[in-house]
Amino acid sequence: MKWVFVAILACIIPYTWITFNYRKPGPAFRPYEDSKNRANVMRLLDARYRRFVVPAQRNADPALFRLAGPAASVAAAPGGLPVLLSQTLVEIPLMPERVVAVTAAQTARADQPYTLQFTCSVPDTKEQLAGAELYLREPDLVLIPVFERVPGDLQARSRESLVQIEIPAGTFQPGILNAVLIGARESQKWTITVE
Image 1 (tube, rainbow, N blue to C red):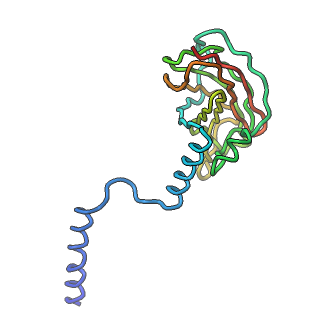
Image 2 (image 1 turned 180 degrees about the vertical axis):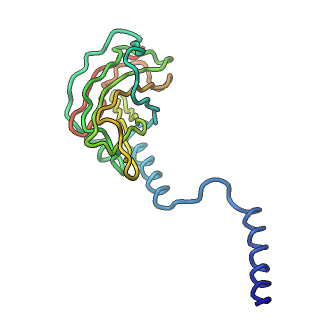
Image 3 (image 1 turned 135 degrees about the horizontal axis):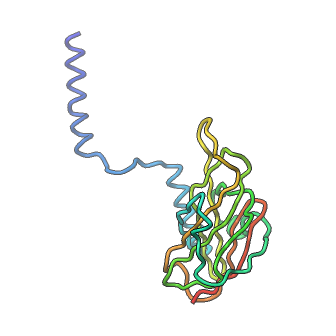
């Protein structure tokens, strides 16, 4: 038994020393996820899309929300992703069922953030807001509120969420953008004049 203990120590001590001295910092290589992300980036670049991850604030306070200019005229649009974007993405993100209402400014300045507020609904209480993804291919702007599944037996408080998104300054170039906020069954669209 003594020799087994010595053999274990003789292997563990050099292994531990080599691991701590030569281990790659950061997360380990995940072949499936890393390859999928790389393919997604390459396909978006080939389709001339620019992708931005935008933080979203859930349960925003409508009393504190102020538009930077006149309100945009928002109209209902068919649900689902635009055809080109749905063919380009490797994996379609989990999105809200409906975008019910949008409050956004008609004009934006390229050197200032653009803020909008919207109400969306999810199919059940097992999903919650995880952020938003913005896909820009002038003159088209596609905003997708991204939801994630709630783990275990937990549930979200409500099926409807009031969400506020702030798109960072420098994202837009001067011109006219056709914006659409995507829901799986019902979307909302409006036009933004960028100065």
